[in-house]
Amino acid sequence: MSTTSDQLLSIKDGYVYYAGKAGAKVPAVKGASFDIAPGEHVAIVGESGSGKTTLALAVAGLLTAAGASCEFGEFVFDGRTIERGKIAPVPYRTPGTSMVFQNAMTSLDPVATIGSQFVDVLRGLSRISRKKARAVAAEWLVSVGLHDTDRILKLRPYELSGGMRQRVMLALALCSEPKLLLADEPTSALDASVSRDVMDLLRSMTERTGASLLIVTHDIDLVRLYVDKVVVMYHGEVVDVCNAGRIEEEAQHPYTLALTRCVPTLDAYNLDRLPTLDETMTAGFRRGEGESKAAMSA
Ligand SMILES: Nc1ncnc2c1ncn2[C@@H]1O[C@H](COP(=O)(O)OP(=O)(O)OP(=O)(O)O)[C@@H](O)[C@H]1O
Image (cartoon, rainbow, N blue to C red; front, side, top):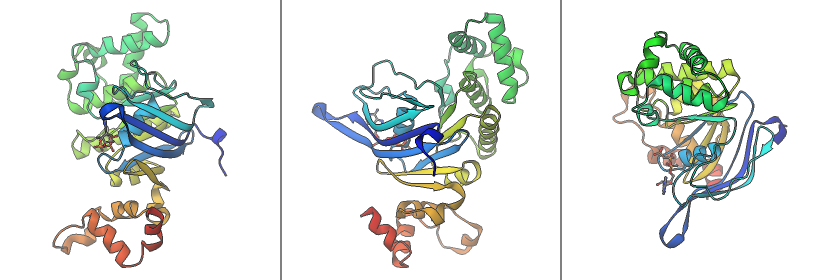
């Protein structure tokens, strides 16, 4: 059995609140618990508004919303207990983590060249010359598949394609050599083939650097291909933690089962219309498959 000390990240009973009216604390994440082992690839999936991004931001220490706060029964990262309480105006990034976001265009500095963005990050990490920082940046660009590095370092984000921007953002996130890379919907703004390229790259780069990966996504199909473990969120709660290759077998919550059944398959070619979430959840219960699992969620 694994223990907290085997894990890179171990969180237990995590709550994240946003500020509501008249000082009320509105919970967006309620009692979340999960672990990430060193080198493990984990996805947080769930419907829109279920708290995926909020949980990832709390893990990374990047929750900046005014009045947001969080409490964790336990938050251990890389052997250290991380104190998380009221979020300070300037967020305190969890040391050893980096995050890439959905939209590289709004995450990168729009007016600074790619080169100067790398120089800022690399010189913030260690005392190196600008020239050396640009050389290191060029190496990172090559490692994410961008080769015309002299030219790219002189460009601004709007001069790159969407796929190139995602690669630059990934290189910027990895150049601090994080132990945990978080990625919030990194492919949702990209077309299908570029999405696969970016996911291949995320997987190969984290395998190469030994970093663990925590990816937030809606795409359950993508999850099966690229991650080891799936954390399923529903209405702010972590309702299942499953091995990615055995979601149907290990799922305890009807939402998780419903989610897997909503993926269209070739067998479904003769259906008048594709199954929807509510329909698949009800069908599962009608057939008796979900009864014991339904009791759990009641
Ligand atoms: N800055 C904020 N202030 C107040 N409430 C917020 C804020 N950000 C998110 N929320 C609320 O917290 C809940 C969880 O939102 P969150 O963005 O974490 O969900 P999500 O699962 O990542 O959704 P999506 O897949 O649509 O990005 C939602 O009810 C959302 O409206």
